[in-house]
Length: 297
Image 1 (tube, rainbow, N blue to C red):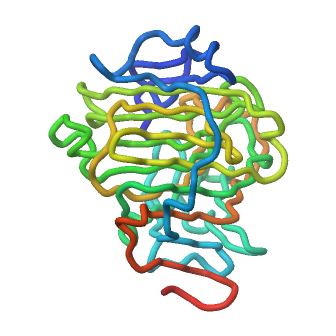
Image 2 (cartoon, rainbow, N blue to C red; image 1 turned 180 degrees about the horizontal axis):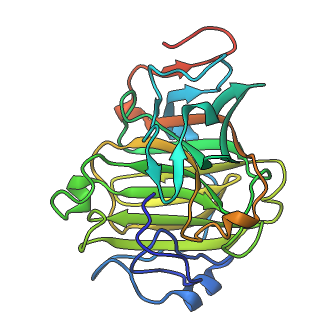
């Protein structure tokens, strides 16, 4: 995720991290303000049902059942750096009871947050990526996210070659309420050429229990799922290069997640697992980490 502006409740924005999607296709069409990413591109559209996983093989799995984060796969992203008034701390990343917990906190020295990625340990191209997570322990000021990123985003201003940022979901309390979630794309880097497209939707019961969030990525399109139900798809700015996974709990001073001074800390983003499936034609040896029986394979 990259902040270049703040949320203003529009369906698709020309800057900033977020956009908006409606619960049904009719609302998506009504709210779209026309930033479609160029001639011939399609905007996010609501429809459908879950992916057919019979076409895929498991490529990567982390159930976070180990005593600590597996740093052969994950790295502490931007560790000890300050971003928008909040410092990324390794101590805010813990595992226990079969969950990964990313915390946001407020202490005597200010606000802290957490972010990890597979940039140094695992990249993939095409397939289906999914996490199971609980969002209920969020607070004003925080934003939880499950996303993909490319290390070369914007290098040639061609997202097919450079890759892009794919926000499979972003969740905060400042974008419609506890049962609203967002999905966004960012491409051509984060400077003057930056482009973005996004959607928001209501999901009943999102603020309680665990939920599944998934992205099916093909050479032609991105398709987003929540709890196995297809919510939106787009052919805009599809990456044709390998990307890595990021999980983050950010507490920023730009108001994106709401007024953080009104928040209650610590707050927690709990992830049960992350899985990636590869198209069978592209499948290779699976990466399995922190399983109940066994270790990294």
